Image (cartoon, rainbow, N blue to C red):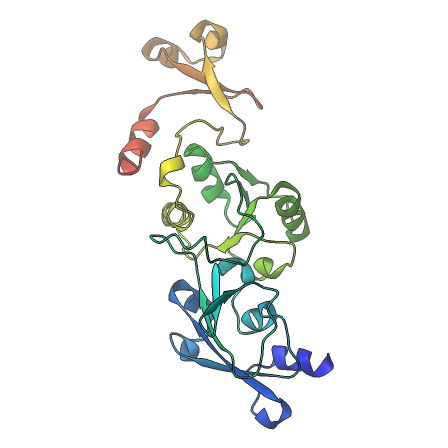
Length: 263
């Protein structure tokens, strides 16, 4: 076990005679974002002792397990329980956006029945935008990493983070490292990554608390409206959780215009 651990921690170790075995890894598409520049889009030799589970060398080489959707060893799909053998040739793929490979994917026991997110503290604006599009996105400035992992495990949520270290947690089964630093690009990235365009339901969730929004009669909330709002708008909505009142102001048109291609 000690030698195996050293192999995982030092995949580039120069003293190759220390390790009895070697395997070849090739990472495809955006998984290369996690690799050093000199290792991207090429075969990487991984040297090891024993027979580690395939997830360990993948993460030792820098790729979080939750970013991987398909592993092919010597031409056959395998799961994370596969133990690496001397001479193996390993191809590691991210999610396929335009090709259904679910019949051959063996990494997870079952997919999430419904997409719901828990978002780390660096992505507050992304959380708000996802909510505006109708997606369940838990967020709090008070969440620490352990809480995010616990929520994801207990509620079956996808972790969205800018901290790739969070995705190495064993309890996290679904997650994504958001590449962009710009909120508008981030939301496009997430919608594309999880193929969510057909699930967008604008203004069905509260941007503030993530609660459900439902129509409410104008007279019910009239005492909470500004004079001009009361004069020019007739249709209103209210969050069932925090009670915030919404109406279709100019920002609604802007959001619809931005996502008209997928709404």
